[in-house]
Length: 435
Ligand SMILES: C[S@@+](CC[C@H](N)C(=O)[O-])C[C@H]1O[C@@H](n2cnc3c(N)ncnc32)[C@H](O)[C@@H]1O
Image 1 (cartoon, rainbow, N blue to C red):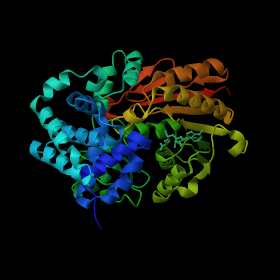
Image 2 (image 1 turned 135 degrees about the horizontal axis):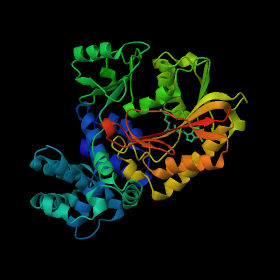
Image 3 (image 1 turned 45 degrees about the horizontal axis):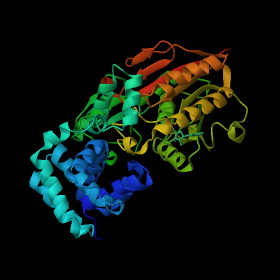
Image 4 (image 1 turned 180 degrees about the vertical axis):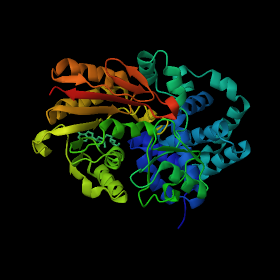
């Protein structure tokens, strides 16, 4: 089968993101099928890198163009960004970065742009530091201006480290299924497979790999001995507890990382996992099948806020609301968030989270606990959200819990910022209903 040039494939993915939205996790697998096997990892690295540094790359290319390109030539514009990315952030030999970009122009059917791409990249090579110094702050830091403003407002003392962490690559972290194997024993298996790894200090189930690998190369992955999950996300199951004799609702469950961990960790009488997105719910099913946990969990496709649609009127002892959120704590893992999110999304998300909290509260038993979680670092989605709920809901109070990491907010929960002990940014708040 004829394969697509890897640079052309990367430009196409970025063009789709630019024009139609979507996400890298949806677009990349399909694009990877079109390139040669040896180029699959490079395609991913190019798309992630171009998303991560999109602000800087577009600022630099803009400063080198005498006039903006036409909309129909956005592909050429993105190819120049790709070239600058390779020159600025990778170890590719500079002449190869330029030559390959110029060659890709022809493959894109735009030979007229050869000279332009060549000139822009060579001009960049002559004065990279001076060009970088002229960029405005959002471009230089590769974050949209609205997001920087929010980080500064919410985290006046931490925003710089948040930004710095967001521009790094996240480590690949595993969750060891301790109902099947001990962490120490799994570490030996990794060692025998030649995969360098260490235990995470953050939580006893987590192992951090020195470099990412394909999941298929992880020993006994198919047998369910491990899953891929950031250590910050692994706190949820521990806070939810062991579950003996209890009924658990995971209200926003897909793709199922926390549902699976709750089942591995606890002896729940009953677990209901809901998600309103059928495609994503199918991934929960796949995960539970792989981990041989599907017979212990009921899956339902429904809008959790519309309790008439799915609730059998039996109240739950424990609820996990891992709410849809801005994802601003996991930008290092999903750098396309910087390209796709809009400031106006935040108010909408806050409203959805509020509706979910209110609707789910009535499905909780008196004396029961609800763990509210987001992978956001924005206060309106986190501590402000919880504080407003506490003001409005007379039978709700905060329950004490502790994590070995994160900034404790006396009034609302625990905020982990990206990079704290190498973790993703996460917020957890545990609410208890008056008994
Ligand atoms: C942050 S993700 C959950 C991640 C998941 N808990 C895990 O650990 O793998 C949020 C999920 O909420 C789902 N969702 C959003 N609004 C919902 C609603 N009203 N009812 C049910 N699910 C919803 C989304 O489809 C998405 O899968």
